[in-house]
Length: 114
Image (tube, rainbow, N blue to C red; front, top):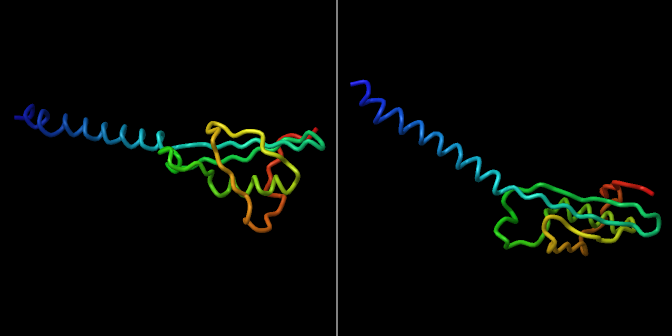
């Protein structure tokens, strides 16, 4: 009788738990995006990077906007004299920094100074 219990309850239960775990992990991994924006200041050759990991916001292809903290970082860098160079991995990011208010330059992450 024990083999019936194992065949009907235990074995399928293990596969259900394994399947649910893998499905959950796949959902988390697929939903992760990471936006990186590179900027440069011509006056002194300094470089800045604004980046953020987000969950599931941009994977559908519907939104071409970065997360708010990346937008704030880019606005701070522009205030400090940096210009947009590129974004990775999505090269089609639309970064609208007008109307964000007074963002301190300290929110700009300068990665290299020349």
